[in-house]
Image 1 (cartoon, rainbow, N blue to C red):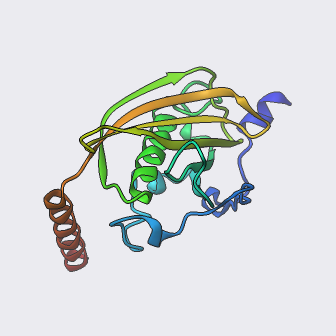
Image 2 (cartoon, rainbow, N blue to C red):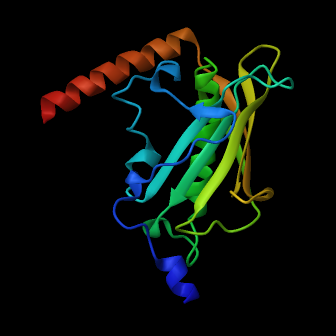
Length: 196
């Protein structure tokens, strides 16, 4: 009976799971993602995985402690995400938090790439269960080029029991680098369309 609980999966497509909106948050809109356009937003590593479903929610207002928007994460790792038996692969949980911390920067109008990333695995993440998390900017260096971030995952009924936590340092991209990325993105889309 217990094994059936772990190995049972969502009926139908994991991508069809609809998450409720957490209190004091709202769904993150594509237009809020600085630089990213609607056609590119679903081409990320995580969104391409058939058994990963995740969604980001953004705080409706900035907290007194921070001038930056905080992110809330809701996710689900299906049966093909297995690392240890009946649990999600650690690389996927780390990738989710890396993307969430980076997205928190982009949504706050800071274009970044990961520079440094540390992960602590406290408790294995079960497959086929809803997992929640938060990600936010902790601090920006005086020169404005290094952004410290934090993220963690937990079960919905116990936010204090941290499953996985991450600290990241993201490097702010220069205007020249952003322009080069935009050009590359447009050319890449053009090449892809011409090759199909």
